[in-house]
Image 1 (cartoon, rainbow, N blue to C red):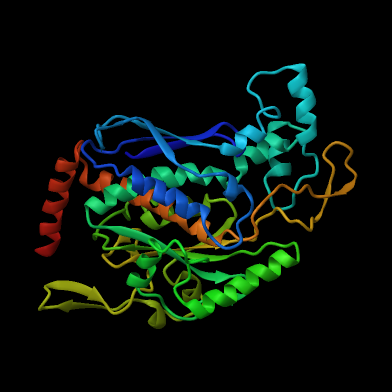
Image 2 (image 1 turned 90 degrees about the vertical axis):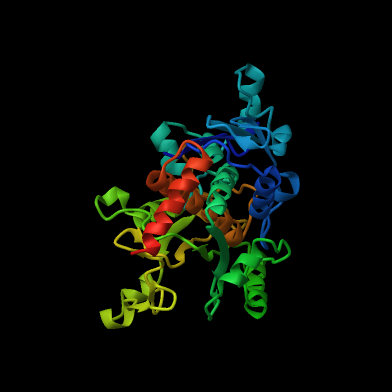
Length: 392
């Protein structure tokens, strides 16, 4: 089983991540991991924090001589902004630290954020500790761990990429081909990671309008997994259904309020005859095929060999320069919500985080189905299964 954990606060010393379950002998490209971290920092509408940080993963355990050794992996991503927060959030307590902490105390919870619910849950009359962990800064650790999962999937021929299909009121009105989406993973100059330049220009205008108004803007990202084998996941138990696991993983990303598999939302307002992907058999290729992919590559919780398509619906983030009304947690009086330096559009970055989460779920599904303590054993099991499918 592939398991991972993250730790660290937004303005703490560092973000940490731990992952176990990867087979031994997997080549690890640190440059690729750092490339993924850099992609998460990009995007039109990002705030000043991205000018401070230069995310890089330092691996402390589980990788030697450029490959995994079958042991748990530990990594660290430094928070450069810690230098500006050290006196406010020290590990040890003192009178000086308590006095400094009062300067950063947050008693005006932001609507839509974890500030109030988290403070009530943990019994703090100060949302500082809650927002530090609830912050989307945490996704940097997930992206680093997800890069390990992507490297494993690549060894078995599976690739993952994302693109932006909507920002605010501006939508991409055409389907995107896999090659277009995959190219965006290498194109670091695409401001909103949209495959259509004209639509992207209109998306940028939408971001500019929100920024000018002191507002924020959300949107939709689409994650596509290409060259997925048949048979990952299961219909046997509710928690083994792969579409359910993917939905949970993507929904766990900060500000995601909806997840769609394939044409799920449109299908809800359609007739069955308009939705199902008809099946035929290609005698020349000796394989079953589908006329379309409205199911998003999953039927009954099992991958069917088509591209897996997962969309995340991202609400506008909760920190507004033009703040909303709230209530003081101490005095209970009306007050304007607190403002923390923030972004005003994070749709492309959320797409990268979603790639990581999808990769982690799929890598675990691969390992559950094919097993193996080493990459050699895993590949042998995978190849044998591929022969079985080809002979079906």
